[in-house]
Length: 147
Image 1 (cartoon, helix red, strand yellow):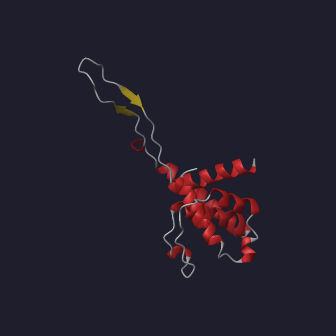
Image 2 (cartoon, helix red, strand yellow):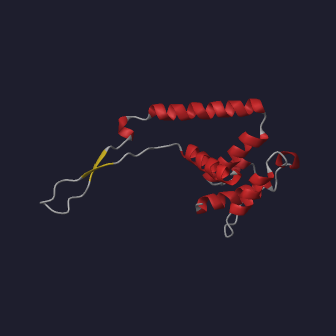
Image 3 (cartoon, one colour):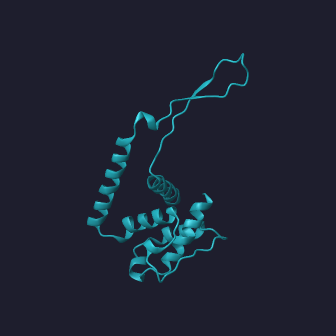
């Protein structure tokens, strides 16, 4: 697990300390235990409970984890469906906007010697929305934990 995620788990753990007890009960104990087991031992969270979440200087990974917690455990079923539908729509729109210019098919390698033939390598570079990447990584970690 990357250090960025460990630090994000530290921030999430700090935020959960201030969460309403009724809301905290909605989050599975295993999920909270996973956060505690994987958080950084050296990073110090700068969470200020006098400010709202949007006023905080939180890591993107922290915001993504909080979004998953809200979507999967805290919000009601109607809101959950709306969030999932919105996420799918954004993902689809992002995929539709990709054009051939977004994918670099051939990239020339530097020529070491004049007598050497020019080398080309096939490289495909995909661009994904950072939030989608983060959510996918969280899902992978969660699946590993649940077995």
